[in-house]
Length: 193
Image (tube, rainbow, N blue to C red):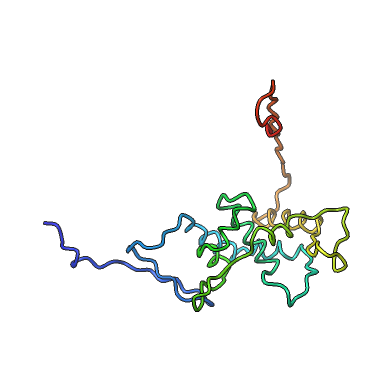
């Protein structure tokens, strides 16, 4: 005998976020996301503090009263996008409105009919585009976010070494570049590697 639908009690799960209304997970349908795994990535990052440490390698010369998105949030948003398979900055024009990304960055979801928005592609571009031949820092008109290559390199080596209980005596870096030559006048010949 098949139980009636009134005999079933749907299970619900609640996730409490400090600055947000509670997120209730149930099996009633509604708005669905394919990026739910991002909540696990964000939780791991909160525990390991990788993006927080990475953000300390950047210098922010923007005026504080004009900042909507901190360096740390810009880095988290970009890295989380990459982890979830969104490699292009253009993807963030849509992702900036996705509730899952908003929750992962610890931001509030839509308060009083005002949807939460994250950084768009133009703002994230300021984080990535760092020309060496243009004036940098507080005197620059456009390039207000800088980074220290040495600090970034040192950070990732230290994170790697901390993953071991005892530092390894030897580290082997296997850098295998594959260069497949393209013969003839094929389309997209410049993108073969």
